[in-house]
Amino acid sequence: DAKRDWGHAKDYVKMMHLMLQAPTPQDYVIATGKTTSVRDFVKMSFEFIGINLEFQNTGIKEIGLIKSVDEKRANALDLNLSHLKAGQIVVRIDERYFRPTEVDLLLGDPTKAEKELG
Image 1 (cartoon, rainbow, N blue to C red):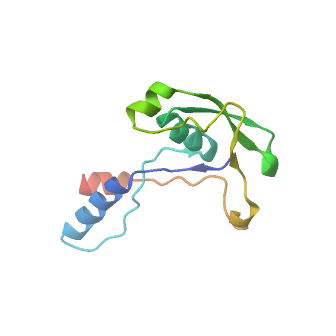
Image 2: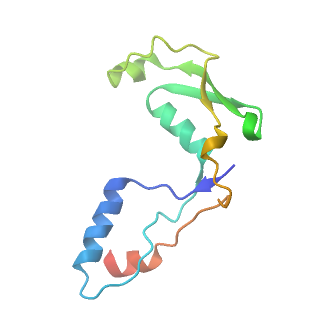
């Protein structure tokens, strides 16, 4: 159920460039100011390529399975997803990547950067 402030690398690079153009060095928080759960981010990523997921179980036993495949979407992206089938597990939680001091919610406040850098 962890939530993160996801952004696009292109936007972060643009903001880094703008920070370097500032007349004096300052500290800025570069963020979107919006949170999305890791689960929803995974779902959106799969949906983008034409795979609809459903999740089962909770906690460390949670898995993501293919609910359906949108062949038209996959073909439009020139992807061959014919090897994927409904019910196939494509997402699992791996304890090796847990960070013991990680927080459930990471949200940045970009107000200063937006105001001063645009």
